[in-house]
Length: 102
Image 1 (tube, one colour):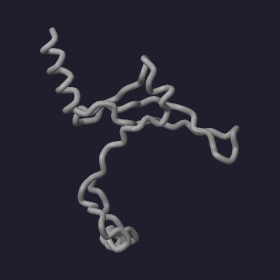
Image 2 (image 1 turned 180 degrees about the vertical axis):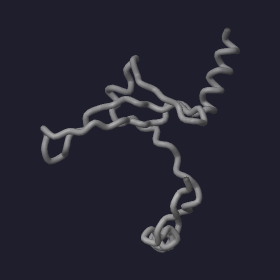
Image 3 (image 1 turned 90 degrees about the vertical axis):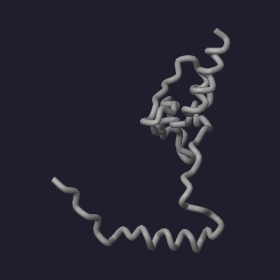
């Protein structure tokens, strides 16, 4: 079964042109750096941290936390941190250092 083509309601090229007009000094061809700031530092710094890795081998934080609403303190939603903990290069450097020590 083939995927159906996207209808004309989503015009990516027109969106790119609008963004280039609004932000002329920004290069949209370069992907952004991964987020490294933990959203729940009190949970992310614990020893029983939940971690996961992507297809490239980068390690991310998978800690879930309750995010309260600004207007209603009794309303909350579950959020996940998704901060990058270690890139593949950092893991390789750490592994090389461990090899030198032992």
